[in-house]
Length: 236
Image (cartoon, rainbow, N blue to C red; front, side, top):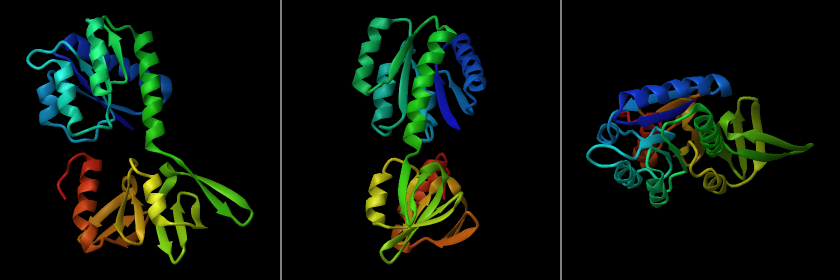
């Protein structure tokens, strides 16, 4: 699922974009969760770092869209920004906040869909990577979207996946570095877990794929904060 915020002070524009996203969802067979905001302040007041993309009007009352984007970038450097504007000359300012693109009003579905498909492809590529695991008979390609957790035992890593467990001689620290920016976090020195598959946290343990793993005391605070951010700002 991809989570999107639409920020526009005009009800008609919000409704149009919402309808376009619903049509796009059917076209690309991708689940899209779209939340509507009438001002940038409303978005910032409720911001929880779980958004993948923000579709932001530039011409907003109070702080304009560029100013709001600058506020967002102070705390979230990863979210994709797209501006919607009836002032095309203002869109160049989007480069100051690393905006991906802009859409000129009045928005037509063809232009909207073309730009959104590109943005969604980028989001999906950022959300997973492929890991190549050497096997006695060759290699096994594993997508991080299918990886529950990685366990280190001695000099070997054990990849617990949807399709079974695979072993490879490798470094957990190096793997962790390669997965920076994805939904993986160490709960202790032995386990690197995929936050998306955690079913339950109970004191110093977590349940994932039917297994119970320990959360170490030194890593607990940082781990639980990462999990809270991933789940959308819940308190743990």
